[in-house]
Length: 276
Length: 311
Image (cartoon, rainbow over the protein chains, first blue to last red):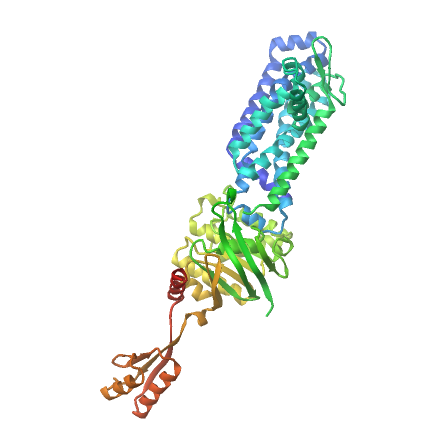
């Protein structure tokens, strides 16, 4: 298992897309570094409460960057499975004394751990810059490393299933794009956007059904922001107030994990039955 | 000798979507391979050779029948510790160097002792004459070098059974000779080799036993000697030219005998050949050579496939 995980890291580092991926992260980190050194930001930091200022920057960063980083991570790792499933590669791996279950799980873990390491680099650097500049050292922001990796692990299970069924990198990227930027945000805000327009109970049931079934990467981001800004977190999501303000809910994370387990189990089943 | 590989009525049908254009790759295929044999599997393209190897290695699943390797079900991965495999058109991670490829597949093969594995890697690279290329990324390797590194990875864990699918594909004649010598050397260590190859002359040189597959059916199976010998054709070579009187006597026994200046061949079997020998002896003509005619494996293979296709 460790051998395949190690090789996934090697593959990740060897692929040119990762150079672009890390250049992007380095630019983000440098931007944060220079921004923290500008006179205006230093002035705001000096005037405002350090905790408030740091939380404001961190939550702002997460709100904008979370879905983008998630999608970039998926793009850069989406070729791992199709390349492993190529003729001449997969047959040799299956001929070795490793179960198909272990092959699939190791590759999956390899990709997840690689993204985890990348998140440690990105979020760790940003946290260091902000903390050193403000003098406010609070490790809560580092929780984003976990939630980002979790969101990636959930969405990456879709990449695996699609790769096994179609062996296509493009299809898995397109499906993930559709889910992260179109379907999941619509389902998450169905009570605010869709239900006032469509009163039909059957349609509402279908939307609710899909909402609970599908993963919720956007809401995992909301949970992270809620924890950072010390907002309340319920188990079930609630809509409250005049502005239909929604509170984040652990349910979003739990249902996403259940989705991930189900899709990964389906992938393992198909992979163990498939002829290569 | 104990059978290492055994199949019983193995069948494989590749089903197309909506059931149209199903392909029968193997049809009730039963055979066995004993320990220490070099077994050659022959057949035209699409005969089912690679499918058979893939079923034996658990890469593809049979539609019907049973396949056992080392007495265990082919789909079980536990026996694979004793097996090496070189697939046709293999693709190794091209970002790895030669020695990294061997290290990677060695660990996947269950080699846990690093020092022992490093020693084996050195040996294999030396055997394949790739030592000076060990630190070079394999994307820079030629086709022949790729085959050699593939063969090295198949042999790395010192397996008891090695499956080789077109091992000399793309290798130059010198390299082919080297690979043949290596295979003979492995055989002398009591290892079993399952060889799929289009190069019939090579199979003839290396293999103890061969099977011919065509359209999923097993057509012939036997030792190379048994298959290449032409049962009823005998050649008699004399030390002196055959005189007219002797020619007439031979033709009286076998009117279809081919008579050269000092050579006769008869296709009427061993009894006729003996009667011709008796004529020569009675006339005190020296017999220089007496042989049963053999055909090359290639000739035999082409004849068998032609007959099969015609029927």
